[in-house]
Image 1: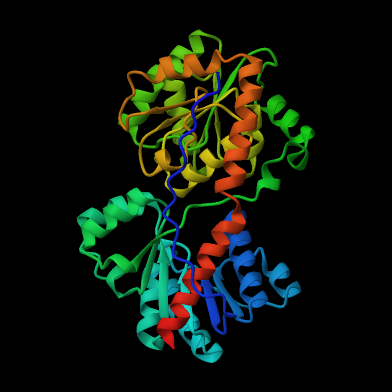
Image 2: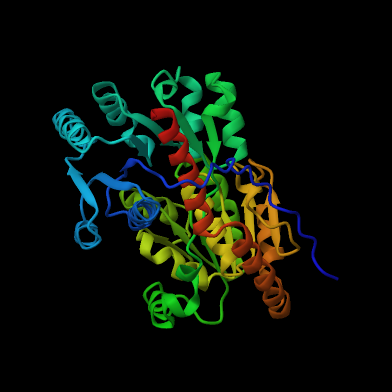
Length: 392
């Protein structure tokens, strides 16, 4: 009997007309050393140019500088505005001057950490702007008045849940908030693209036995209380001989290693912090647990895991329910339901090889149909046409 498949609920932005984008589009990106974000900014810039516009990229850091030069994309590398008050002041001055020189039509801010910088530049230059928010930021805004956000022409969020939350919190006009579901480059998560050697090297470095199952948590919660709840399930996995890989930010790795040791899990729990290892690790996984505590990182990890056909257990938080294929090989738990997590993981790990192969085909098709990166770029380009229209 085939597993049931609920259609994903995508709140797509309305399609703008298909006239060429006659605009000078400034993409304000986080540090370009973030490979995923830097690549997305570059893909957008190339699409802007292909549609008749002039792409501009500004960002702290510059690991993609050579690629930007090779593609002949005008760019401005800024001081880190988050490093110090002086760094922020210099970044604001440099960006404002560059925006004026380039006569940018509008500005798209890819990360909330740059919102204050973008707002100051908007005031000085009169540029229109849109900002992209992740789910944790939207939740954090519940205790603020959102004054800065109300000055942006458009706000982009990654789920309809986030959209509803933001509209209610800040009393914004309905047309101001757009939902753009994250997408991935399907080729990036192909086994042969990653390379069997990379996967085998990780398995060796992490000392994972070939004959034992592995659970990967790509967005391990950092909150002490939530992690303590999670350890109940991690200890149950250890008793069953299951190994777990927890991904945490580099700055948190030492602390997380201490917590793992404190709970007696050091022999069966690996703490990883290199983002480049996440996708190869997902290929190693017999089950993937996505907690939803890390915003867009959680959303992307869930899409990636499904693209690789990995059975999933996910918590119903921050929009994960909107992108999870409802299937016998996936489990959606209530947002705070730690009590049934162990049973859900046990059920997922017990799937047969045939059941896993069947799910992999369904899940891959589901991702290809709904979460291709090209669709995400299409939606952002619609946003750009909208901003250009406002400016004109």
